[in-house]
Length: 381
Ligand SMILES: Cc1ncc(COP(=O)(O)O)c(C=O)c1O
Image: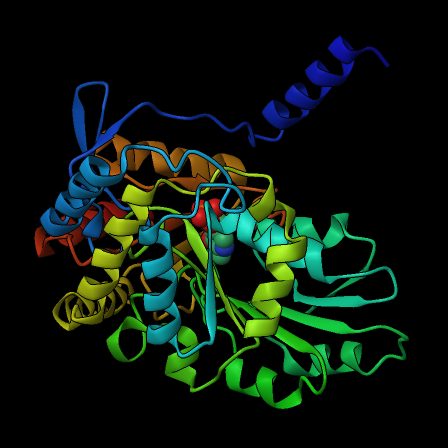
């Protein structure tokens, strides 16, 4: 099969299934997404606390750039590990109750790095079947065996964990599931994991839950062996950190190729992230406002004949099922000035296309009312 044929066939397949992905050039002004000269109320971002435009965090980034320059200048293993990274790692470890934190440029690379560095051929990765692509891809590329347990089903996890094995096991789950918005039963998973290491990706929980925003694990009073937090959601920036023991951090520093062979995040960004941590710790008002929005949205949606997922988090997916219908509803919402992305397979299982509505503390009540009114109208079409 020629390259030309292979590529065209793959593109045609996506188009025929209404699963072709496109990007939109746009600009954000907080809760608005400006595209082609028009402003849309944005219900698709992950800026759950509205901190991507926080003046103190913007100021810290500018200050960091003045002090450190705009780039780190190299891998952390060469000369790219600056005082700003060192301070942020200490702050994160202290805040989240771990011996160590290691910074990564993205959550995707953190998840890949941990799984690739830790797992060997004779081992088994037991992951929730709805885990993020960065986790499942790392697991499926790895020589270890990947077994996926039924979503949030501790019995299914236990059955897989108890199968005979000569190597070690890694249990993988998310704190809050990115496409469903529901939370993992972290305490139950922790209680049955036995000698397996437990890895929790709390990309969508950190900042929004738990005392001082310490995330899903703190809220469930669980300390996984490996906690991955990302900074592209509630923190409003980007990047990630892996929280773990001293030994595991030293091991990752030796063997995690994404750390060793990649330029460290700009120190100005690390400086801004330290400010973001300080702000997040005190952001109870923003968290309470977000919780009020979630509660209001769910109560009002109960009167609208659309299928809302069972989620109490900022991610409030509306399950539509069919790809074409989901795209159609997203387009109709856009025509009313509302930006809600249609999420389709392979990001979610076939037949479960959805509108992934996300709420932010930065939304005004009137934003949410506008969305509810449009959904109500569309549900009657
Ligand atoms: C659960 C989860 N983990 C990891 C990632 C990847 O993080 P990053 O965007 O920092 O690469 C995402 C999404 O972006 C996510 O939803």
